[in-house]
Length: 194
Ligand SMILES: [Zn+2]
Ligand SMILES: [Zn+2]
Image (cartoon, rainbow, N blue to C red; front, top):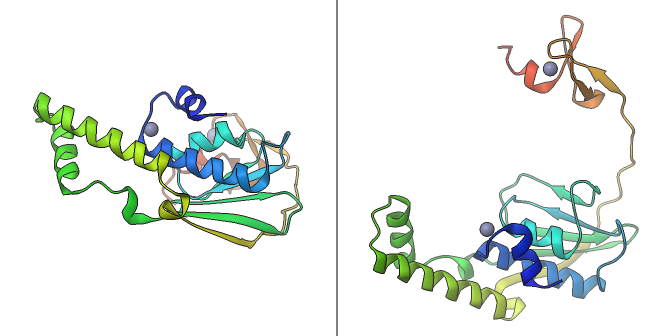
């Protein structure tokens, strides 16, 4: 699996995808080549473009249950193999990836649709250079990489399906809400001002 595979899946090349690609490759190197089925688990603390690279390269996906999303808004990626005591934690170093002032100004202009064609070209060039830098820089310049103790595995529980009394659709019982003795799914429950 190479960067082209990640681009194909994600739909475009961007700095975020490049970061995810580097992270995914570090995990692959650390744990050996892509293991079959569900062995490698990724915990991602953001839902940026980078996560798409991890899905493709490490084969960690929501559907298989080996991609865990924690909504912390942090560029932190933790990988472990089920049954292993150690996990690999990769933290993006902050300063390395940021646009400079000039880049920020250009970005604002492009968003406001006031950028000239020259400025568009300049922005594109700067972005391409940043992507190249991310793909080529030594890993320790880009990331803090550490081994930590893996979390103990959670036990799998199979939940029943309950029916929402409002919309009639089914939901996992652990996600159901009860009001006036009736079951509600979350979207229906949230319509009420409680
Ligand atoms: Zn992207
Ligand atoms: Zn409902």
